[in-house]
Image 1 (cartoon, helix red, strand yellow):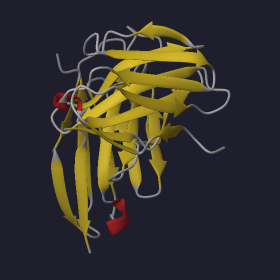
Image 2 (spheres, one colour):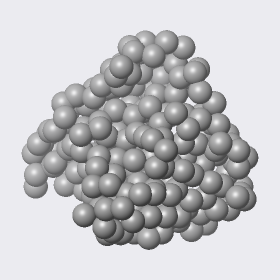
Image 3 (tube, rainbow over the protein chains, first blue to last red):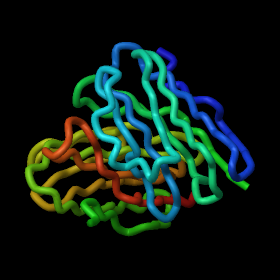
Length: 112
Length: 111
């Protein structure tokens, strides 16, 4: 298995632009998580899905953030409009049941 | 509030110098405590899951232990390749399958 695949690996964008991050979970996994990692706050859960249904989005910072999971093999995290304080590494992870998560390699987002 | 606190934040070890990392948690009804390793520029990699006080798990030079209030990750005779950030996470009853992470222990092993 190729693991959890995230794209792009790096994204540099200007403030106000729309950013879309993509994730392909491991086949057969029924949970998908989006986390954000910064030096100050560590890993923060943004939203997670179970069987493609959003379960908890209380970690989404504000209305500028949205996430979708149209099918079991694909999810997106969108930021519109982006701001410099959104700069961070965004991780997608998947799991089967309550087993440990498998993380992707992350997307490093820089908003200038 | 902080549910997971890891200490020390950073640790420099000589090769072969054993040490322990601490993860204190405040959640009640812990369902599981997880340890991950993260290398620079990569996603966290799963190491262990512990479910009940007194449980221990080992992998090469790493041993994780769990009490009712904290977990320890013991590194025995570390090698430079053990240099990484070690993350602790707790799984509480309040969510289906969500993990709350600590900020990590950054370990550097000097040859």
